[in-house]
Amino acid sequence: MNNSRRSFFKKAALASAGSAFLGETVQAVTDSEIERYAELDEVLSKPVLKKSLFSEPVIIESLELLRFEDNFLCRVRSKDGAVGISVGNNMQMVSLYPIFTRRLQPFFPGKDARNLEQLLDEVYVYQSNYKLQNLALWVPLATIEFAILDMLGKIAGKPMGELIGEIHHTEIAVYQANNFRGKSAEESIAGIKKQVEETQAKALKFKVGGRMSAPEIPLGRSEKLIPLVRKTFGDDMTIYADSNGSYDVKEAIRIGKIMEEYKIDFYEEPVPFDWYEETKMVTDAVNVPVAGGEQEPSLHNFRWLIGNDALQIVQPDIFYFGGMIRSMKVARMAAVKNMECTPHISGSGLGYLYMMHFVSAVPNAGPYHEFKGFNNEIPLTCSTSDLVSHGGVVKVPSGPGMGVELDAGFVRKHKVVI
Image 1 (tube, rainbow, N blue to C red):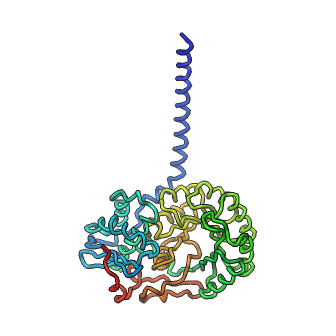
Image 2 (image 1 turned 90 degrees about the horizontal axis):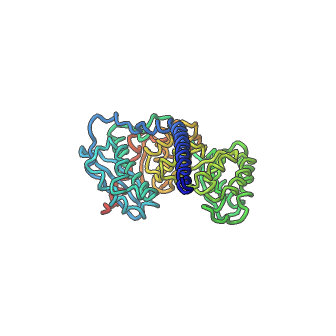
């Protein structure tokens, strides 16, 4: 046998042995992964929307997008005459409304609204909408979901929260969120104090870093502000810090160690939101609970973050993540791992209202939830809550659907977007 032939058989034997070893390794990894995610996959398989509340089909006759200046409403109507309405995330919808009208709106007429959970999966594939996954898709789709939930709630005589779970919280304790980046630590403290006094909140969140790796202005602001916030508000105040992805791992850990010293209660997005492994590195290195998920568009990525203990607090934004049903799936996965769910809220429209309905049905909700002030530009009435913070607590509306009525004259000002 010549050398080249001998070499060929030797390599073939090694390849065969290597393949066998690799097969065993892959099988071990696969089994390990299956075991790690088994409980999460089990909760993901369970329906969220309580379809049993509706004995008859609720066929969608029309779904419209309405606009007045830069305010967007979604109005849905069933063939039996039931109507639901929602207010969009106007800061985003002013750019994204063509996706609503061209990619999402045509899908829903003729569909049974009781199948909303399944419809969300189907519209994701419709016209290859999955290629748009992120804010571009989820904000318009959340706007549609909220209108359909409002309609279904009115039909069933239930608030939105009771359509997606049991009511665990009839009141929501708020944390006062603020953004004084660009101001000195001393100027920031003055602004934070003013806002906290107005709402009487027992918790607050302040900004550190420069946002998404941008330089901090003024330099050194965070190192001064972290101890100053604790000194100003004392040990009884719950204090959260939000980096908005300002740091690399090394710097995130350094700032996290300062937060440890001053007992900051959570550290939000220490590194850019899509740095998953790096987020886990920071989480493993600091003794401050790490929060994240505001920008996350993917249910599967949340599954990884939760399954790998990369976060201790999950923060889906119910607009940015595509609605309450998808967000409830994240909250349920977090509950399996004894994690809290403290959703992020979008700052325009009626984001705070939808947040309250969602949180009302989340058993593992955090103790305080984001508050950026009420939107007084949208005239509405609510018979079950004054929607005012009393001692840092707001009562969740308990009426059907979203629990408020938009002023009819205000709605009439809006024209159908074609």
